[in-house]
Image 1 (cartoon, one colour):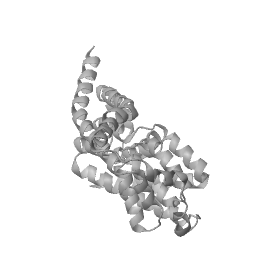
Image 2: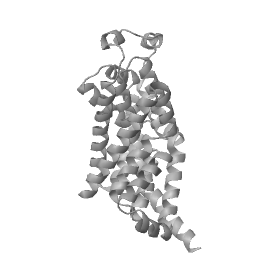
Image 3: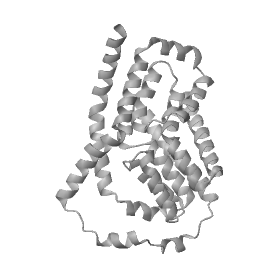
Image 4: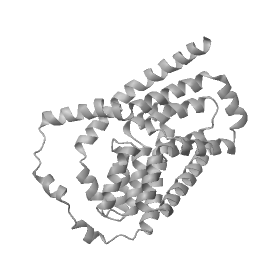
Amino acid sequence: MNFIKIFLFHLIHYFLEIIPVLFVGFLLSGIFYETIPEKIVKKYLVKKNFFTLLSVIIIGMFLPICCIGSLPMAVGFKQKGVKLGNILAFLVATPATSVSSILITLKFFGFSFTLYLCGVVILLGFVIGIIGNSIDKLKDDEALETNQTAADFFSKFIPKKTFKQKIFSVLRYSFIYLPKEIGKEVIIGITIASFISSLNIVKIFIENFLYGIFGYIFAVIFGIIMYICSTASVPLVYALNNQGLDIGPSLVLLILGPLTSYATLLVIKKEFGFKILSIYLFVITFFSLLSGYIFSMF
């Protein structure tokens, strides 16, 4: 009975903390969705240079889609001749951060941690992008830019939305589509976080077995085998951190979790082959471990 009271206390506490932040995050995501059309993203993705890679990463960080939502876009980019490194950087930047997850991370972990996490994602995007572009064997940019599909041609004749339609589209995306897309994951994440926070045995287990290098091993294994979207993972990792998990492994979990969904790994293997998948996993795992260890030293 006492456990149920503690569990409900943590559950209500997390919901009260997150709901205002989610409201703002969903609304901003809807605005970004309406004001940054996909054709703009495609335009910047077809070149291979520093500024294109930077644009890809920044756009990916602010696009209001999770890792599952980014996969169809990534496949479409490949068919359009987009460079491999740009696609991999996009797949890193898009699910690792979102407006709502950044706001929730800021709420739970503070400004320094959030700023460091965003910096790590940007740097990781550059690293995986440069590696991908260095082994890319696609055609030259000039030839690719002339390859327009029928969809691109006919899209020019689609009537533009009125201001009222744009407002409706923003609200529909923010408060209908996004809650349906990640609402279940957020609720599951908060429930698991509340459950972990309510169990004293979890605290004892973490303090006795997940210290030092074992915490990092746990973060890698847990992060890879259990996919949680970037928004839903924050309260769960926060609960583990409160129960004794060091800040370094906590950072590793926040990076690895959203980037290693089964769908992402399967699509990368199918579209680019096992070699690219192996490079993707190795770079993300190594970089997240290094970043977590460096942050823990401070």
